[in-house]
Length: 471
Ligand code: PM9
Image 1 (cartoon, rainbow, N blue to C red):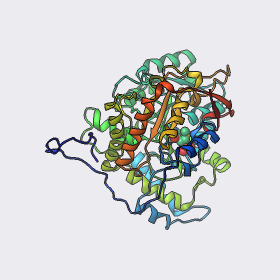
Image 2: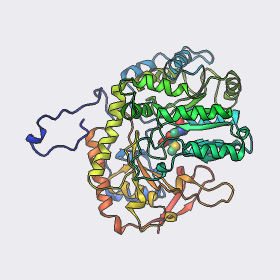
Image 3: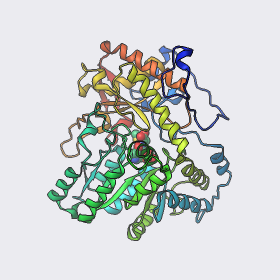
Image 4: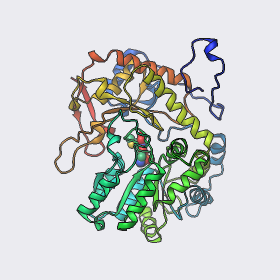
């Protein structure tokens, strides 16, 4: 696959060298595009929420990259090697080895997926009244911090909230903002810094190695721990290799391990970087934190040698970890995202820049300047895109931000986005072309589009289940 637009003439083609994915396809799953009338019925019945569509009614599914990757033949073979013992499964030890080898942490607690690990770390470390600074909120992460009695404080650099800023490391922590918080509330009220690489809600934007090193120095001065959301850290390592001085000749695996060495532990939604359909983990260096988390896991997830996964899931995950850090895999993965983003940029469609690791984020504010934020422009855009083409995307704006737990008011994030999330090793360049053309068609019809009103709102993580009607 090329990251360039297809050339018009053979002359232009001369000298061109494309790259391609480091795999070939062995098994396929049919997909189909239902008619416009059927899509109209489907999205109305789903309350204009793409999470409530049936997957059979979707043509190209860019809802999420979570649990939607294609496993390799080795991972499928690994499923046959599942040791389904209740306790001490051999696959758990393979997983523990893989996490130690590539992430470097000492102790591992397996969980059924990322939010299981977020629950454990939040419960283990946060006391009511604590503050948890982080480089932009993530929906499930912040909710678990709040449910444990904490308050999340955003300390990401300002550029992250500006979709047009081309800062190469928009995921960086603003150390001045963090130090101001430490001085205001006192370090004893900050159980840890919640650091994510890459930053999902900012557009899949990376954190630099220089930033995590400086963060470590600052936190050491105040005795504060750093826990990493490592969900897309392999992708973060790619951006460091590409953009940061001194890393061009280091492998993704080396960069990943160095980055983790500046942190005290990590939680992981293995459904992303690790190329499996289910799974997660928490890994830490502190034996006391491990002790608490290992005790909590048996209450909420399962025994400490499976944590909600079957033996075969853990085997596929252990293999996925080794595949996830291969340089040619990551290059092709981010390259495919970039291919779609470059097409849209060339056509003048407003997206978050620079193009991130796992998705293209359409800027719904610039798409629909006539739709006020409380009429849900991004939710509207996701519904319109599905209607046009059967492409499923996800709202990442005011609906995802939810309500302030103290005032009960909507939170109004500066970023009002729709995410076109690319599953790993699943779609081809032609699927990206079809998607780009669908976005263009919706963009061309933008002036006629009206917003939505919310008619059902669940208490937690409302974006998953809220329902809307057309205004
Ligand atoms: N992320 C995503 O689609 C899955 C559903 S939430 C909309 O982006 C980070 C950075 C994530 C993440 C999930 C989780 C939670 C933690 N951190 O979904 O519980 O992107 O495995 O992980 C989703 P689980």
